[in-house]
Amino acid sequence: MTDGILGKLNEKLIATKEKWAREGRKPGKVRHGDGVRLPPGQHLVTNWPVLDLGIQPYIPEKEWNLSIDGLVDNPVKLGWDQFMELPQSSFVTDIHCVTTWSRYDNRWDGVSALDILDLVKPAAGATHIIQHCHDGYTTNVPLKVFAQPDVILAHSWEGDWLTREHGAPMRLVIPAKYFWKSSKWLKRIEFVDADRYGFWEDRGYHNEGDPWKEERFG
Image (cartoon, rainbow, N blue to C red; front, side, top):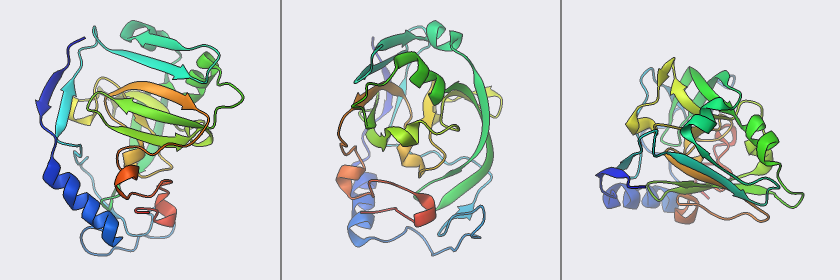
């Protein structure tokens, strides 16, 4: 498969975020949240900001596939038609970005992580998943986080197909974590028996990324 690539790795952006992580500070002015729905240090937006590494892959649906492997009893490689034939779900969730914005009531359509788990059947020793993406990005979450009932492999947002800049044709959405844990342009989900840092975790971001605990940087 040949991916179309828009842009190049944004070294300046990456260096700035690494500096934030070293200094343990939040970007922009301090905000306080509301203690109920808006986590501490966050502010609400109504748009959906675009954040990436400077690269936006283009993967046509006819060329797209998703490998789910590692410590599973039934590894699979799904093409687009196979993915769309899986049970479809729709969730409405809030999302929170480490750069301090939050957006309420996002409607996602796609395949529930619980249905993926039913399909591949993780082995007894599996403890974490590693997300691998077409732009070279990786990130990690515990299996118990991936298995939460509102996690979705989303192909649509607000009733429309995802756009390229937001991860089309499919991205992962993990509402309980800062949004860097929800990777775009996902091509592989690897089940492993030990934790392993991803792109931002290697560069000073907190390994857990819980917005309610403000786990922004390690």
